[in-house]
Image: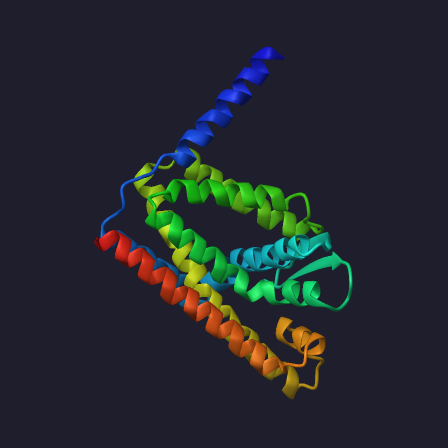
Length: 250
């Protein structure tokens, strides 16, 4: 038992050392290549469908985190094969807490990307990957469907392989790619939501997007919420991108 505890302590210590050790900022060419890779994932339909699962994961995590922070009880999160997701929380069906929870989804990837850009600028690219690993590990506690569990396990496995075995240069490049994907993917997801809203309206289906849920909770119509999501995501992209580029070119 003592040997097992010692091994566990050594493992935690090694993870902490890796996560808190800053790395030199990469050349601008690496940063731009990472941005190009993220854009490729957004532009190629097959790649977008696959990588969209990660964006949905962060989207639903945003709902769940704000639900907990506003005093709601998080009942569970589901991720589906069509890249949609669902976060269920228990509490008052109206009020500021419910509004904040509903608004957090599309802004979640943008906020995560902005925070990631700050970590990269401080030289903690590997720390960012370990933070991602820890966040996904925590989501295992609230996932409620087999497909969602599969998405989390694949994400955990890929992150662990990169953070434990990949060369530091590759870890840094991948961390920049993840950050660019969050920053660029957030406004892309808002545009996708608006496209789906138009399609559902033409088909006479009930509108169920986050913007429509917020329209039912507040006096503001859904298009206003779509616009605010878009502005928030684009603002995060501009701020995060400028921070990254300024850091590596200084």
